[in-house]
Image (cartoon, rainbow, N blue to C red; front, side, top):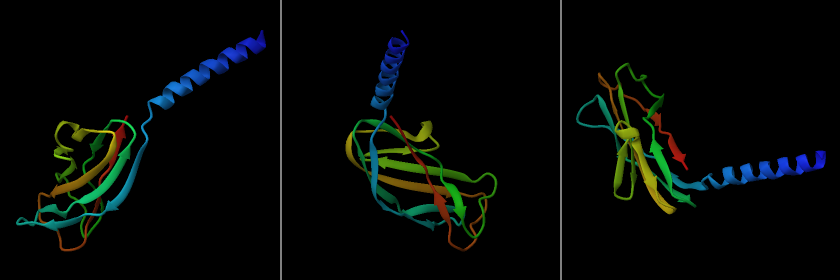
Amino acid sequence: MFFRLLVTSAGALMSILASSLATQAQVSFQGLTPGTLEVGSSLSILTSVTPATLRVQSGTTVNISVSPPQFVSGASPDPANTARIGILKVGTVEVRSNVGGGSVLLPSGQNDLVVDMEIQRPGNFQPGTYSYSILLTIIP
């Protein structure tokens, strides 16, 4: 009796494990090229001169979202009321972190992503080197 319960429980566990594994997406990131930011005509706005690029290989269609940029280091930290916008381009589709959650459908196969950003401060940037990070999230 105990053996039947053990076999039944093991079968149910394997079934649950198999169904959860089937929902996972196999995604690999390759060839990251960092971007370059530059102050434009306004000293309070940093934009990408050279966006970051990377190649993504996915075994299935997934959603990918872009987060707002986060300040990592620089001559002065972002003050309150700084607007941070992450931009993601997949083919001809562009999404922004500040519009509709910044999510786009990523087709299966190999895709080239372009990651861009814009930082708008209420005052001017101090001269120096700034570093920001953007998080890309894959949702199967």
